[in-house]
Image (cartoon, rainbow, N blue to C red; front, side, top):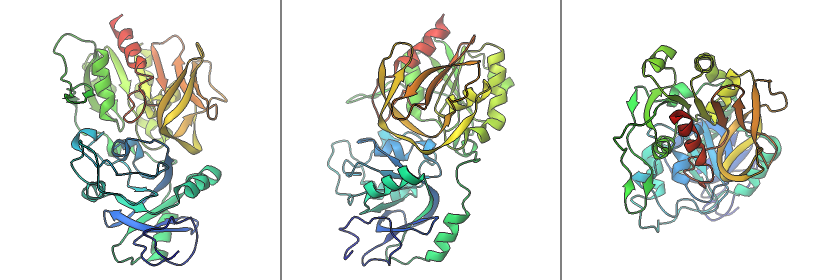
Length: 394
């Protein structure tokens, strides 16, 4: 490869090519050379891939990607720039990203900043000029590897040290990251969904069912959709005690998305969820919240080989056969090969048959594996917010 800035590097163990200012060092010793951009430095994480064609800024600010390096399969990332409206969280999301094409000057009327500068300001590392198709195929065949992503303007890298760091990182299995990305204080949520030309809607002041949302690493658009569906929302940290939640007199409790291993987070979250179920408090969980609802009802969770990440995942609703196109971001799943009698499976993935929805029998509690609030993604599943709020109104 004569010029790393204009070629698409494939996973290899070859020598550093001329012009390479960035590298992805996989734990097995594989080196993926490219052109670094964004922040200068190095970061360790699990390499995954996302198939969404839009919404890279929302993806990079989704706390569910904490501890991960996102490979974007769509080739043109960064070409519409960045803005303050498309942030999904103020806390850390993905540590870095891998893209195929060089980031060009943005061309979009909503752009306020170039993606490269935005990444640098956020302390996130980018790697361009990569054969993302080859890297994605590797992940699909062998699973999501641990790796270090590094960027140095002059292409200086201590490869043995980077490899040692990649190999020493324990990986996401057994890791509780919810406490790292969760907000630290209780917050009364204000603001509805975004509309072009109008911005974010304001929360109505009328009497509404009160939802306490537990933040395990939530995307802000979740709370906006709860408001749109007719709820008043109070957001609390991941480790909020049961007594504090009950003192807020919730009509229902929402369990948010988040990063890491649900079994690890469940060490403190599952007892609280079990107590809520025992009191017949209505519960709605998505993604990590869905997985921990399953654990609270007696199910188990498993680490997936490649996970589901994108804005185009088909899910079948078993009650009537309707197919929803959904937004997903998860590397763990509720094991539907041995669901307990306490649970009914409500949705399954049409890609691999994995569990995508559960309902707790005899309780007003349900969860879905996907992200019904989208951001990015389709709006097929907004009805779930209306279902939950309607349950509280009754």
